[in-house]
Length: 296
Ligand SMILES: [Zn+2]
Image (tube, rainbow, N blue to C red):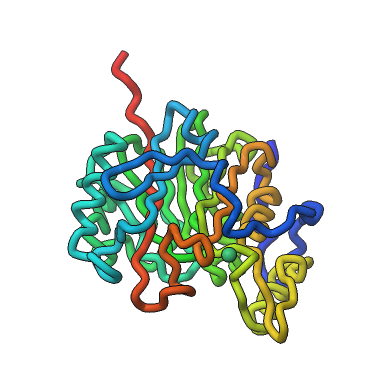
């Protein structure tokens, strides 16, 4: 078994990188054929194809026009009811929704009994100071919000156990996606080779422009940090899809068990985008829960 090494991702660490991908960056025309689309009232719920075939987990990624953030964006007063609606579709309990506060950090906590229900009504009540949650408890929907930032899910059908992280560029630079694999191993004994992982729609390498200061930080974190950047005038396009997939691979997740939406939230128009819409942006959300085992 390959055990992830936490120290690998510290400053000056030398993570083992996979070979660079030759794939061209996705564009707005690229259809999300990697995901299943289901109508849900006046919105579309998306599911990862291979993850949707796993009997031990339910999940959905919500698109516009539904804003799932009660604390900001259009129709925020409807966000809680929309959360209830998605829970009903998934067959999970709204009251058990558990969310991290999402502070653009890299901390991940294991859900404890007293956390269950935290953040179901909004960010104010969410588990503070963390950007990821892991659990082996069935029937506890983890719900994370996004408007451009990657949400990365990992699921171990053998244990079973589940985790989701909010991998902002800061969190990505701090190695939060590799840490998700490490934390699942440390808390639940998950073998990285058993994990099914998914990277939800987020800012793509076609549009996600950043400054030299971001490149400099990635260089301090990753031996080959440059390869996630392409020059764009005097700025750079950052490939968060590749950066997070690389962390999954380096932590021991098998390549055929990683699903990438490869849908850019900035140019697709189907999702909320903070980069495109600024302070008026709502939030998409990834819901996922371990399924309760049927009584024997
Ligand atoms: Zn784009």
